[in-house]
Length: 299
Image (cartoon, rainbow, N blue to C red; front, side):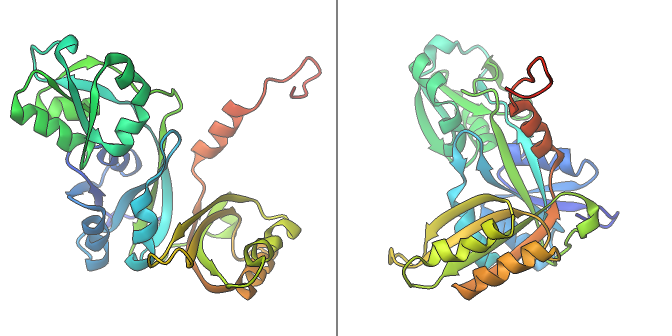
């Protein structure tokens, strides 16, 4: 992923203080993060050249995939040039002077509400979906209603002058969102740059066992498929598109062979980008590994 001095503007969906804003600040500390109301607007900003990149959430370790993105990516005609993992910490906030016992409703993005579901249930607070986390904080600040709270970041509480009633209310300590960085032109990593991820979309032929046959090449060539998700197209329940991440570079012979076999059984195949794997992947794998036994072997 290029980080040249000219790459100074990066689009995100939401309002200042949103988690996407925090992801931009972590990945591009010297860039100007620019807020857009919708994912479509953020992607269009890259397409028109208003920004160099877009920072877009694609999945969360608790709430799963961000569904809208899978439908927007094919039409966006942009390329994935990087990924970033953000440890998400949600704060329950309200106007100054409010008491947690008085809170009846919590406003936030659907994903954030899903990530705090158990906590909200325990507190007897009704979740209310809104467009984004920071926007919810702004609404609570504007309405001045002591029965309303927002779930958002510490930065959002600072920006909108809210008081944090309960910190880090996410249900799971591993709550992490994966973002992809999109650009107008491809900027693929080189095979020697290190561990890389290749992301692609494909649509299998309408023949029996097409998916099984299409994916067989990855198994026989020893290519690790790290993600495979399907979603419906055109509202017919017959046309299915698949989104996949694999470990490896298209220049690798094993990946070449696997993609050739996939192409034979597919009506469409589009590579969205090959980019460096985030160091977070290795850190998470180490953290999840079972402890070593007395002889140094894992249990």
